[in-house]
Image 1 (cartoon, rainbow, N blue to C red):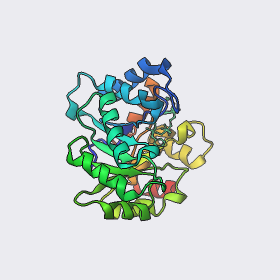
Image 2 (cartoon, rainbow, N blue to C red; image 1 turned 90 degrees about the vertical axis):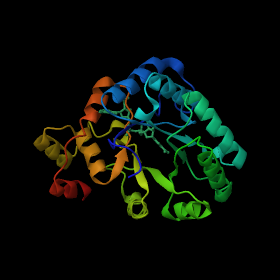
Image 3 (cartoon, protein in one colour; image 1 turned 120 degrees about the horizontal axis):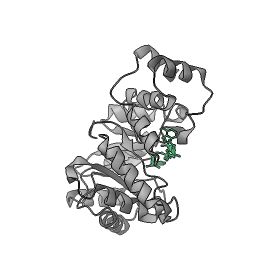
Image 4 (cartoon, rainbow, N blue to C red; image 1 turned 180 degrees about the vertical axis):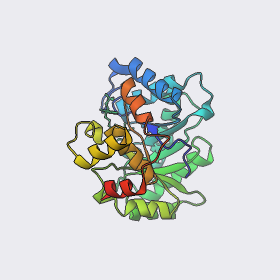
Length: 263
Ligand SMILES: NC(=O)c1ccc[n+]([C@@H]2O[C@H](COP(=O)([O-])OP(=O)(O)OC[C@H]3O[C@@H](n4cnc5c(N)ncnc54)[C@H](OP(=O)(O)O)[C@@H]3O)[C@@H](O)[C@H]2O)c1
């Protein structure tokens, strides 16, 4: 794995707004990220898109005063910014908003067939060579696209693919995960809690397993993702939810229960 332990991160979609900038939750978002970090999490997932950059500013505020090496920041260049110069501009913008000299992992957020992949990848390799980002990867890429992207890189490797993956969103991902693992590409699981749907889900298997382990259904769902060799990045601004999510760490489901959930 390229990403640091523990393999659970903090999502940020909605912090500072979604598609638009919304400053109404800035303070609670900063506090939420700080709480996650204080509970031992290190990975923070953000993107220039989120809240039109405000989520990155929130992350920048949340990490202020912390040794930089204690956090692992993932950010992403939006699909409308994949031309060479636009990638460079987007990287600079993210660094400024994050108030940091480097991004740990920089991802192409979504593919965009209107821009040649080789052009985007050369720009990604340039910001890597310049030390502005420490590693590069992709998001929402199929195995074929990853292969095409990797083939255009001169001397670097894609280390991660971030995809939607959770107990109820699996079928379309069945070939992506084995492909990534076979090629030493970390799989970051976004929407790991299906946007909070598991807490109230009427699912007898999940319910029974949760009861037997004395864990919540969300904790089972996150622990299962970790058992699949993926790195879940749940978003929460609610301190009780953040503590609950962190409680998915430090124990493991038995093989038979993993198999049951997987089936
Ligand atoms: N690469 C991509 O294209 C892409 C796409 C989507 C998302 N992402 C990333 O992945 C992250 C996670 O995905 P997501 O935010 O869409 O979905 P998610 O993490 O599955 O769900 C987030 C929702 O679940 C709630 N929640 C969190 N923990 C909970 C708990 N223990 N109990 C009950 N509800 C809980 C949150 O509300 P509260 O805040 O009230 O707890 C929030 O409404 C995003 O934040 C973003 O960083 C990436």
